Length: 351
Ligand code: PMP
Image (cartoon, rainbow, N blue to C red; front, side):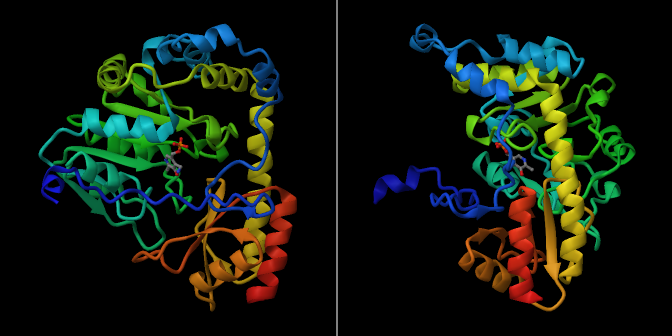
């Protein structure tokens, strides 16, 4: 068809499966197995039909933004809110990666990065992780058009020390460095305090994992007021009303309950530590994880086979048929009960 010549053709990101069967043990997309804070459900009952009739508030001018700024002890001009961190990251790619030089990110990382780069025609270069799946900061010293990496990295779960994150940011003062901290609340140290020193650092976080609200789609970025202003300019050139009224209200209720948030993260960390012992016992190896998932490989059974056998048993984990990682499974940390079922299934499959 002639018109197809002028179509923007992209290879989309492939998200993990979202089975509709409620009986599946879903350990494939790093959701939190626990419900959101109790106050979130109470707030649903208080949602106002009158406010639904109107367009929502601008996200950065809401109580949610102010509550986050207060929680993180930053200025209100240092926060941007979007529709999940995918929205925030996508806008950040569009806003900050305009150079002809390549943007740098790890070869094994969140597989949306190259999709956005291709979508926006951004050149990029992947930098190989070392044999232990660690990011090598020295690889990020060449001239480039920007840098992005998750910390802890996904899908590996490997955490980079704060001093190494700073080393990368400091070596790249002429470009924007984005640190994707989707999983930072499960035991890592955030590089957020660095935003006051480095006006080129953007830190991105999400409500999808540690705050149990993947379904509400809330993500945010923190950085210098200048970075945030540029991000808002692009956002308001695309869509003024990104965040719906309900998400803004319910997100606020989640931020208000600090105790629940901390307990929930601690519970997942405890289950993860036990899961590491159990998986080790079952013949798996993996780098120490700082996320709500474990990136494991079995000593004598191919990952694909385990993936398929688990699925037959109603347990979904994530598998990628990709170079360097096709012998790994990414297993999300579920409740203790779900994990016990996983260990029992694995005992049958590869014990
Ligand atoms: N960054 C990383 C590293 C992720 O794994 C994910 C989850 N797929 C995201 C960002 C996006 O999460 P969300 O859009 O739900 O905030």
